[in-house]
Amino acid sequence: MKKYIAILIVALCTIAVQAQDYKYLNFVVNEGVGRSFDASAVSVVYRGNDAIVTASGETTAIPLDSYSYMEFSNTLLGSGSAIRGDVNGDGRVDIVDVNILINIVLGNDTPDNYDGRALVTDDDKVDIVDINAVINILLTGH
Image 1 (cartoon, rainbow, N blue to C red):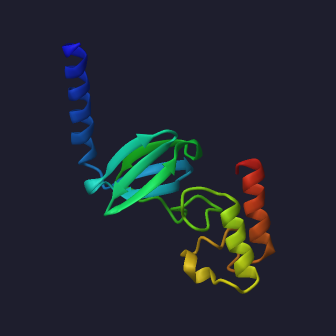
Image 2: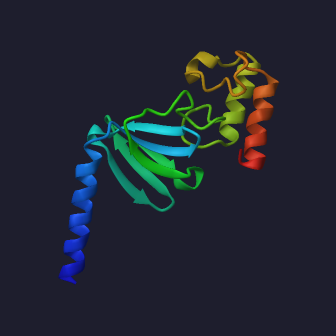
């Protein structure tokens, strides 16, 4: 038993030392899209199907079934620093994102509140096409 504990401690220390060489902890969906966190003082705890990430004083639940892999990197994920269709930036594409877009189209909210995430189709306007795109993501998973 002591041997297994010693191996586990060595493995964790090795990971911690290697992680110090990187600036970001990235949870990646595909092709550079996902969520990036400052790796200088990051903590990750796994609870159920979520990774609970604490970085820069903020705690975020990352639903692991939405991501392909996790990596330490010196590259901040590109303009898709949130999942496409995740308008509120909570790491999930769900009916809440559709409701936000509907409120924006109806004039009850503004896209400025969502750091560009409301522009789902990248055509520089929020309209029914964005709502349909998010519904399509919900139905097909991409």
